[in-house]
Image 1 (cartoon, rainbow, N blue to C red):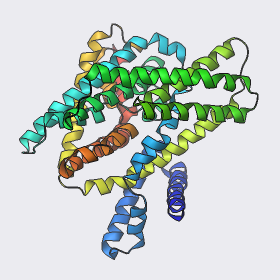
Image 2 (cartoon, rainbow, N blue to C red):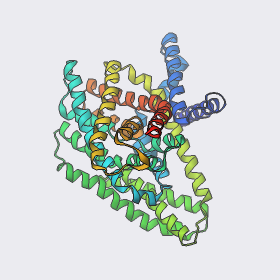
Image 3 (spheres, rainbow, N blue to C red):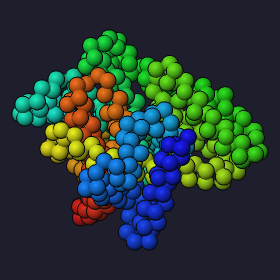
Image 4 (tube, rainbow, N blue to C red):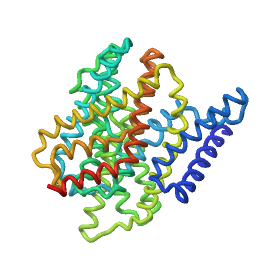
Length: 422
């Protein structure tokens, strides 16, 4: 218990103090500020620890926030709530309007991105003399192919993107998790020489099983949510819904991430339906609760990622390969979007294909799901290969969050100026 409380106190202290400093001084987007400042603090603690020896308090602080605890924190803890919070306010009419491009990007761009990245990284490994198999590289590609819905909904929306483009980015990031997980299961099966039943089987199991669970659990729980007049009980019911759906998916081998998104979207749809019928549910506390919870969990996540980043960089071969992984990620993302947009007849908000590809390539932020999938490869890979996968994943998450996140507004403004001149 003492160890748990110690970690909670440390993490909340970082969240509060870094957030306060950012509010008063730097005024950056909070996800960017937490990761950037946590990396800087981690570097200082690491330096102090190396100078003062094994028993220094700085070294103890870093060791108290173990990197591999993040897998349990995400997969077995808070990921479902973070995904639900991001999707329970989704605009369903827009989802219907942009269903085709979202589906093409979520399925096609994710699949192509994983394959393109896998072969690019295989070529990098071959040039550097590393013994990386094609299945391992394809599995690595599936880890970093899905864009992060949490980053998309919290960072990109602050730049006042056009409604159509913004919704497509948000929708793609919400729905490509299932495709990424299915690809990961398929390629990891090749790595471990296990029979998975093929991609279509895994895709059906991961995606359609999750959708079925999400629909069924929501159908059971939402009537309670609708009928109760106690706003606190409404919040409890929503927590039960997403937790139960995620638990059932974990039990039966479906995608808990997709089930969480389905629950959130259905809650949004059913809530809107009640409001259109003139029977508003009075969900002020509901909105406030999920907004606060989403911000808190995101803040803790980015602090942990930032403090863990330098520990990852100490692994062998990681620094040089991380730079190459970032470059390969950008190339694979751009290539997959280039092919996928050929099947989208009309792009929204007056965007041409080149501008659309540029914006979505730079706006393809990575986050919690990629880190969690990378951590889960530890039992199936040799230590050196595992370090390469972890280091590359962390580098991509760091680069997309910090570098791309901080420059996204300038990229968007440049694209808008180009469109305006036409």
